[in-house]
Image (cartoon, rainbow, N blue to C red):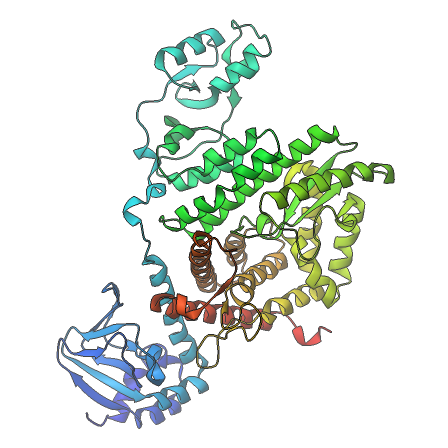
Length: 620
């Protein structure tokens, strides 16, 4: 250990972040409190699991930082700082080794804390290091069945043969003979090399045989024009999401506007665990509620399988939502078969996590009805029965009623369009804390079935009015900031103090839900149309409401917290328990504990940004 040359050290620090932003006088005072330490190559400066009470800055030489699995996190030379994550004796998350003979500037924890307290640039710089660690953690999540991660297969690996094509001038008979000869269930229709349509065996049954159409007609009479397509490097997971949500069974694969193959639901079924699309197909054919109930009981197993695949939390949420959408749409079809056609046009909308494509195990239902302005009081009896059929059916399929009564069975949420417009105008123009808290879920809405124009009108009203509604946004911001992450002063978890979840960490209120609310207020403030939380975060960054770095941090925090929650819920499902959002610290690995703390800190920082962006002090 040696004393430092204060002017020389001051000049050195002034050349490196974050010290370059520290006033010269503060740097000189810091220099008087530093010492110099020499470390030979191979010296372990920090070790996983061991406490530390010093912060280091590399004066010369180089260090290597690895995590507990031995994976490289970073290498750094002159100016590299480390040690802040293990201050106060907390177990280190990293190994730090000198990979060259090195000189280190060393400051004690109290010196560092005093410097960080007085200089935001220092505090923020080392906070960003924490966020980079969380990103590294997401990349190295311990997936149990990585070797069997079949949903990560690229589509080009599923293509078995060249695409079978025809032209739009070919007759229906010629197309059917070609399908029989090639033993395929679909044909791609091309104009030169460009894909223009698709014909499937279902088209032959429903558009030709059932309709008595002459087979001498050209195939263009029955083809689906401009079909949805995929790219060769798309993942099987992405294709499952797309085909499940659209209830389609054939997907042309196109590269440079040229069809290169076809992937079918049968191809996906060969991927052992890719059965959500099979479930959605069975749901679409269910003849009654009893059949739907049986089918819905397959969803927990799918969730458990996906958790143990190399599937993201966002991907799992989209698949669970797609299956939920399929069940709800089938209930709507069955209701119309039972009650007869609706007396006036309507839109069945879903709200909350389902609208955001973020449903998980145990999600309750949130839905509403937007009726045409032609609706009269005499029509309400039909729509009341209709809503009861669907809502009761969802309950039978495992989707509990909304505790707050936000369902189409509630007359308040079964209104003509003009009344919905009045409600949104009142929420936006004359907000009160209670009304905004109760109405926030309605700003996460999505059409599930019915007349899109009814929902398009509301979406446009929100996009036009929300950015100009300062008081409304301030109330939303206050709500977003009020759900504090379960993180104590010394970065310990804050546990539930009473009730059935006593001594457990709530992953939803101050974690998942807090990020949802931050994303919502930032997106609405710019009139953005996105509803999915990750899409909102990205769009908000593109519109300047969030910095690129903050958006990336929130994305990672949202994914990691949801990953931990899904792992917990999958375990509960295997044990025959009802899934919830509360996890005992004893159930978490050291890996999960460490990075949950980082994720919660990111949430807290994002909430502070929201507080700074909106005049919460003037909201009463």
